[in-house]
Length: 329
Image (cartoon, rainbow, N blue to C red; front, side, top):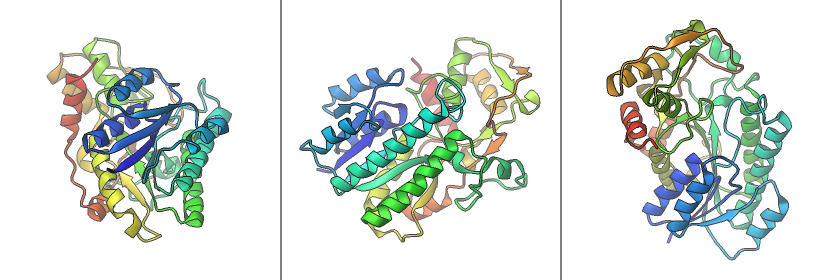
């Protein structure tokens, strides 16, 4: 039986990947500190399926040793555990807390991968790309590739992810651990927390359904902010394909943009139109606010991952919207 270990297994992405691989007949293990709202509910669902979850914080060395001493074994390691909002480091989570959590949890995850002799797959972020370069991008460009600028400013959150990327490459090359870094776009689907800094699509659809006040913030208040989106099941399919080829990849072919690409791109205005057509009519006003690190546009080019792994996406943006609306709770 294939065996896999997932950090942050009780979060939105981690729990979805756990269910995905469980359905594919993998034996699934994982770790989570159950810090985030909703994580305990996901923990109980995983427990029902017989998925072993180690409860604790990967920053804690005592917790690390507990896993190291366990009698489990696995061949694939997916590192999802991290603070996830681009606002982290500027909100109630301080920059010190953000760096300590994201960097130390990654280092300890690498130690686990080395100890259990597994491969290592890291979920990075599209926010490793330069804010200034994105602001200056030619409007004719439909998406950005992996060689786009990663020069600061990135955001505190984005800088923590690029630090982790560099650390992973150094550690894995030294220890000869097969690895892949996936720079993920906007991941969205049912079961996501309905907060605007953690899942804008789920937040927007849920707020629309409950007739809560919504506003277009920044960029002339017209809702032209543009993102691409990806469903966790499509991410799971890609990772499953990556596991099969991870040992055959060239040393300069380890970093991939992982997103729905230009075909999945949408503006907030377009999402509002979809909500009006599928839920009920509603107007959205402009708000004279500014939020640090906001971007008007970021769309990833996913051709490298599609071509390298023969990856076929199943969820269009409309299917993702419907999935969230149908299973909204």
